[in-house]
Image (cartoon, rainbow over all chains, first blue to last red; front, side):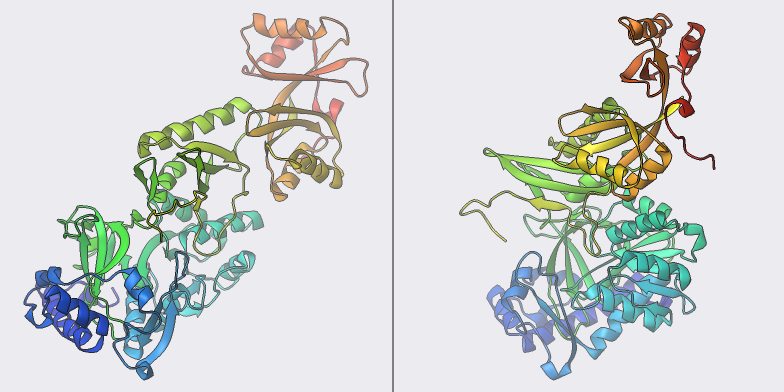
Length: 438
Length: 145
């Protein structure tokens, strides 16, 4: 553990620290951020009345729209002279949002990333290659700072130029790779094409995040790269990667509760759900100075895992993200997450771990097609074998998603490989007038 | 057994041409080609020189390809020639998954290419007096590595 005195502190100590930090944070945003003052007043929420962590449930939520409306500096709680860095969300779903970090914010962030890297097996002696994009995206610089704080030799490879990534991994003797899980697969595939064997590498671990991934995908990455793959979670609105991370047990992500207060709420009623029950993940930042957020709705779906973790950390765990309520597809009235489709596809031999889901309208009906790649090793001589594979994919998708999906087998390596976040869903449905848009 | 190059192609304009061009540009000569089509994709079966090398070249060019063992049997270029050979297999309970024919490049007969679900199919044909062909008789084999 990087900070055992915190990561394995008694629960009462953690909760006491959380309450102290929460109380002072709520007063800080009330005094310094116009939107919160207005919202708290409207909701009749007195930040000075908070006596327990549960009292936070009376506070209003913050949404992505609030961040968009506040663009660029509306939610900053400190003068701009105290901000030392800016990051921005990818802006793929609409207006970009800007995050501002004070020097202290960056120090905290680096420490939290260092905790995840440590859990993934990195030490000051390690060589860490960061293949997340560097720039406005939080992935690259975020992991970079954490790796340097740890004292690891840091290779700022950024995304792209996959052959060079492989060459550096091998030649420099890199021990740990950090990138998106889909890019990790791309790297594994490129290694194979280049004839580089995982045994020739010093690589033993990887920290992957920024998009939802499944247990099956973990197995693919671990086998392809010959490593142990660790999940790192974060979002640029709250900080960046390092809000939570897996430990060596790989059984859920420990949330860094000394800096973030975790709630899971019902997506309809927005009331907190009991532990172990799925809902939307909501974070309140406890120490952030630049843009403190109260009850930020992440749109990520997960649950709090019950029980103690064998690693000794007392920080509560959330399950890996099942999907984002943003990404949720409504197909003929059934809710479908791309990650569910992925889970099915990766469990079928003969199918490569690359796929794309295309949504369109056939008349008034939603039509969903999963384009899946046949794995390179497949024996391609008999039409009936491929027809059987196609049928099997269709049947397994239908039975686990409760909605029928048409399947199209496509040639190996024909689906565009991503060097950052993979684009799994293409929605060709024209949004009808009056429908709720993004 | 001989080696058949099997290629998976999406049903899209220009894909078959691309396949043929890729092999042509690599100096690989084809002796027989047969397309089996399903609604969205096709399966191309090819008898060509150095099939394993051809497979590697195709994979590098982004095609899905594999090498399959198939039986090549010589049949007389006369009515009923193929039927005689197939009846031997049928009588022995061996099922034919697919078959196609081409004219022997050197001899005055036809070559029937068969994918059969039985390991003993070659023996059945030989015992019945048919000539089962080896790679060398039909194309330039891959060098033994």
